[in-house]
Image (cartoon, rainbow, N blue to C red; front, side, top):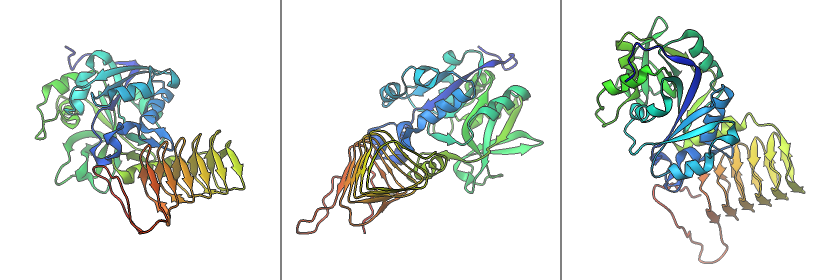
Length: 366
């Protein structure tokens, strides 16, 4: 058992990405796919976290997986070579809290220090400055914080003289507006802290309680304020906003086939896409195999692989692979369309709506 006074190993940081959870706020998309694999700018959210770790020099990465979605995540991320990393998968039988996930990964982490990253989060600027600060200041833990308008929905930190003195998980009356972002850096002392706490009222081992245990034990917990933007992509509006933020940084690159088309602004069109008599206004990304005919794709839209858009207009939306959207009588916006979906308007009589709709869908008609 690692003791709280053990010397931490900081030279070779490991990474731990949490990719369990059921993604209930993104249903029905997450009925058939892990929430961490829903794409932003046509790249799974999970991949951004892996790439951030590798960019910070962290290449030994563990991914916590759930029984329901573990195989899908294994297939998508593989053994890590596509990222320049080595990935170890750590099954977690039940989602019993972030501190429980930490304990689940203890064998993988060993006595190393590590960064823990929630797999459905996006963080502008990555982890380089965070890891450099952790190594240079040598705290027992370093937590990422950002100011939010609704701190009662987050873990909240209270600071004094540049150190964390009090944490609360979703407090009814928050003392500050500093919310914990889903990125943490720990020495192995966090394992004893996680073992020392009791489950919360919701039956989970809260990471806020484990960090508070470190504080109460006289350990140093430093804050690190977010520079740039951060998004938890657990809801539709957050997915669309994350998509907007990422697309704001793309570089214009048109490799697909264009026939009598108008392309305005920064647009990424991958090789193998085909556009006919269509207008694309960036920032937007069109994946390989996509086909647009007499279509309009507006700013902040991501069109996935093999998507077909004919005689339709789309803006500020994400359309996942192998979907078909045709003959819409109005512009579709602020939408997330799942894989293999078909959306069409027919001209037959009587003029009715015909739908096959899964659980937890939201449909707006004009």
